[in-house]
Length: 199
Image (cartoon, rainbow, N blue to C red):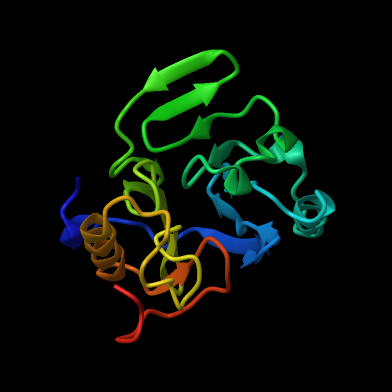
């Protein structure tokens, strides 16, 4: 995996990020955070997962002037249903995960770590919450934003109950904190990293 000091090196600050759905996890109700990233001619939806109604994804898109057919790429942070179940709202576009690029019936196996989707959007393999975790770094005019499930919320949990390797989770959290000015977690509002952010 990449060197943490180089993860944001060369990342253009040209992308626009909009959070379409702010996720939550208040069992039995769960929604994943869904984001829209635009950079150049690429229109990327990150984690089109569980929401109370699909209109919660589609209506904000429409308000931003984006139709489902305008979307050029889907990125999934990991394979849990709460982050993937609404992929089909955006038919026939490439879906990026930690290892595969999938479109229609074609699979390309490739390393995602350090992969630049655009000058302002880079993927990082960050196994932690699951072995298949992917973080999307977005270079915006205001700084680098990490879209990630290494944290459910800004409060953690410090010990993710799904993480198979606590040391690896800590290592990947430190990697992301070394480059992110803002973190958009899987099930909560964006937060600015601080000394109290769970490692």
